[in-house]
Amino acid sequence: MTADSSSTAVAFLCGVKTNFGVVGVNENVRRGNCSNVAGNEVDSILRRSIKGIRAHGQKRC
Image (tube, rainbow, N blue to C red):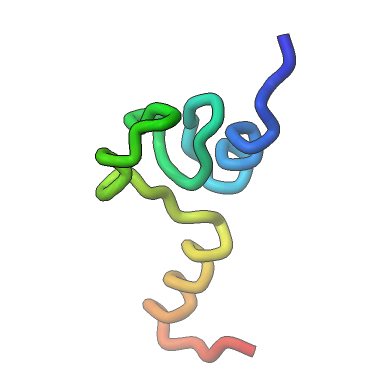
């Protein structure tokens, strides 16, 4: 069995398992069903880093 590269990337970069054929959302969203995307989005490691920097008052380069 071969993993779907998009869901593998989401799991690796966001730390959240997702379903085959979806990107940027958690496992509650099924492929082809866009009605439940709101509230199920995930933050990437980059977004979490930026939020952490801002929370501590540090300037970004």
